[in-house]
Amino acid sequence: MTVIDDGKGMSEDELVRAQDPFSTDGVKHPHRKVGLGLPFVIQTIRMTQGRFQISSVKGKGTTVTAAFNTEHWDTPPLGDLPATLGQLMALGGDHEVKVVRHRTGPKGSGSFEATRSELREALGSLEDLEALTLLREYFRDAETTLVEETT
Amino acid sequence: MTLQELRALREKGQKAMDRRVGGDRSIEIIVGMGTCGIAAGAKEALNAFVDELNSKDIRNVVIKQVGCMGFCHSEPTVEIKMDGMPDIIYGNVDPEVARTIVHSHILEKKLVDKHVFDRPSRDIVKEK
Image (cartoon, rainbow over all chains, first blue to last red; front, side, top):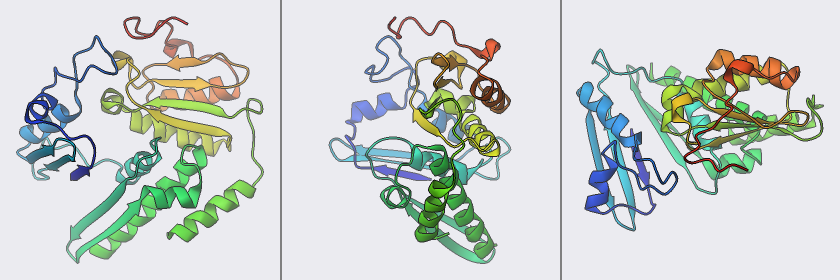
């Protein structure tokens, strides 16, 4: 899994701190000193002999890669990917998200893509029950087709 | 499913008669989807809300995903705002509790007592 953003980016010091579970920028909750997002990913990857990489350029953006070892006993299951992608797209805000899902199976490789602005254009609002339901169906359909094509 | 098909399903849905529950205002469900929420099962709780509301044909619902609300010890946390009920934050909302909230709080207008979050984290929540 690779996540690339074109956000604020981080300096080398900030990048080190971002990987520390007892460090946060302190903006949202001033008295609290934990930031667990990246540390949880890193912990899971270390426990299961996967691969983690992070790089960032201040002012340009950040790239995070996490490769999960599907052979390891302690690797968590993938979970409900279509529902997760639907929820990701429905997350409020004026940002763009592009998802590219690749899958390699016995019959070969395939992929599908989805862009938040296109989904929002098709659905209008993304924050109501029906939109969330339709997004989930949309990604279930895409995932099922991809699995059939590659298995 | 193509984007055109998605758009057609949306238009069909909007033409269908809404079953409006709990007054004219939309019911607002706010789900904490920070790392703490997700680690505690917020994605599954949100899925359960979607399934249960659809199965009861309740349509007038806005679902907002927000970051950490500051109640990491009681995740997943969910706030419900609707006509005829006070704004309530529920804590420890697993899929079963989510279904109970739909039946009890939203349909019957009865609080789900054991999960009401009565005294939110005082270090970060300002008293109104």
